[in-house]
Amino acid sequence: MANSIDALKPELWNKFGLALFWEKMVMLKRVSTQFKDEPSSKGDTVNFHKGTKRSVKRKGTNAIQRSNVKFNNIPIKLNQHLYDSFALTDRDLTVSFDTIVEETLEPAIEGLAYGFEKVLAYTAISGFLANSIGRLGGLTSSNVKSYGLKLNQFHNDNNAPQPRTTGLSSDAETIFLDAEIFISAEKVGDKGAALREAILGRKLGQDFIRGSAFPSIPVSSVATVAGTVNETAGYAIGDTVITVDTMTAAAAVGSYITFAESAFPYRVDSATTTEITLATALKDAITDGSAFSVVDS
Image 1 (cartoon, rainbow, N blue to C red):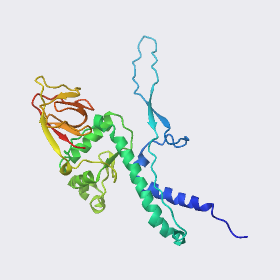
Image 2: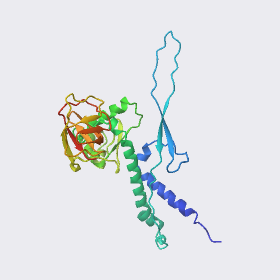
Image 3: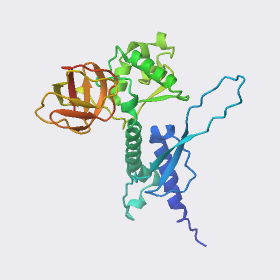
Image 4: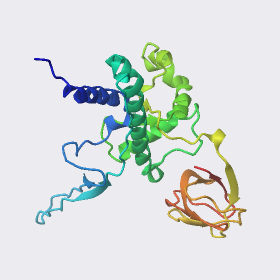
């Protein structure tokens, strides 16, 4: 009787595809897999939970006071259904399996992996504006250590668990690698691996990795519009609506704005030619006449 192995072919393609996919992914290995065994389909919402901080009390003569256990619910909608589809003819299938995987399946999986990386990276950035410690266009090879230490302090202050991972875009990684403190063998004790392989590895309490889909805004490729604040009393920390001198055109929604007195990147939520509403509140006070720059995202 002739062998019949057609049923194994989809499994073979699936195994190769998954192996390639996991090999290409960076971000996916660093996110919660709490729902990996939960059956879900495109469009469903899964609910992630996060516990709140607890407070302690000192025992005295009074009765024991019990505190409430509370978990915050974080709904996550499964609305990212990425795919790549292609067809193979009978003639295509006469080629060796290794060759056809290399020429068809591998490029398709690379595209899917890049798409997932981009989704995860941009999802992570949704919390960046409220938690940023850097400056827009402010990273240089002379201050990367300071930025790294501030980032580690931010993790410590917010009880971030170990291990900690910092994702770098290609241009940010280049700036880090340009700092001798991270690649000098006698300073990092890696026998020259950082300089030889151009890999930062673990530095300053976190693992530095580069992802092809990690976004950045290169200073050399953005259009900047300058303006000044128009409010005699100035603005305090926490304000979000800023009156400005009349601009020739309103700042685009989604663009970024930095002030001379508060160089954090603030995203523009809405704007007219005389008023700008920020997506996140001011972290520093700004005065009347303070210069600012609007940078296209």
